[in-house]
Length: 147
Image (tube, rainbow, N blue to C red; front, side, top):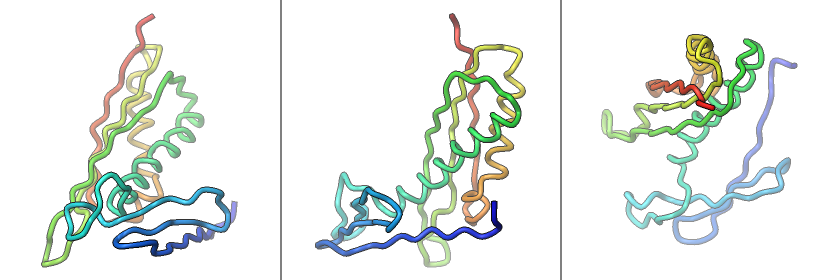
């Protein structure tokens, strides 16, 4: 794997405060809009703020999958809820914190400590988390699946 990778994304304005995201290497386009909390924002459409939080949360999952494989963690399920905090700091809006709430389901009680370690390592090496200045907080839940 090389040391540099490039990811091209294009945005085209459609109407009002809404546009389409696309990439020459992807088949799907994604609608993006100003959030409804801002003037002329639109409800029920993904916003840059949602995508920011989604990038961090999605990176946690994809990194978890790789780290879990490397650590040979046998898990049944992974899900994660994330909440980003947008606030005004020094007269600028910024995403100051993202709280990640991963839930890992395992089948063996003996793997609880390993599962927690894998989640923590995953967040620590997540390239998106490492690329932002927002505070990243983990609230880990490990569940044991009962037969």
